Amino acid sequence: MGIEIERKFLVDHEKWQQLIKPQGKAYKQGYLLNDEKRTVRVRVADDVAYITLKGSTTGISRSEFEYTIPVNEGEEILKNMATSFIEKMRYNIDYAGNVWEVDVFTGDNQGLIVAEIELKHENQEFEKPEWVKNEVSDDHRYLNACLSVNPFKNWA
Image 1 (spheres, one colour):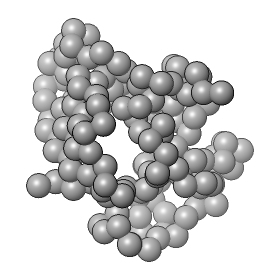
Image 2: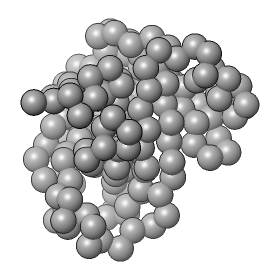
Image 3: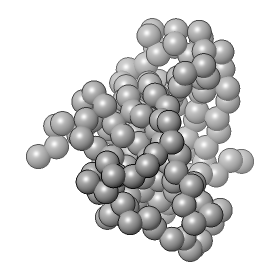
């Protein structure tokens, strides 16, 4: 079984803007199933598409299965079957031996920047970059699936 262990953090916008970054990649994700126990999403990023199945979260871990699918099929699924969406630019930043995935959201989630680090085990130690702020791993509002139905623009 595939297991995803990740921690999420908010990003300091000012420090992020000053950072020299690699080229980002545009992502569009649509959700076919989205409830507390499981999600099924399709993601299209440039010339690649994936279907991903995720189980419920326990701590910072959850089951995850991801499969490459043809891009034209991914686009067709997004267009005809997805019920909610998010769009973002993703930047992969190498820092202190780890890769940080930084998502700069667009559309209804404009203004939100979240950094994620995937870990080998829940107690793994790591060094945070200076542009990483408060941890939001336990706040389900920051899950992409939740952002697709309750976007950042609607938060009080």
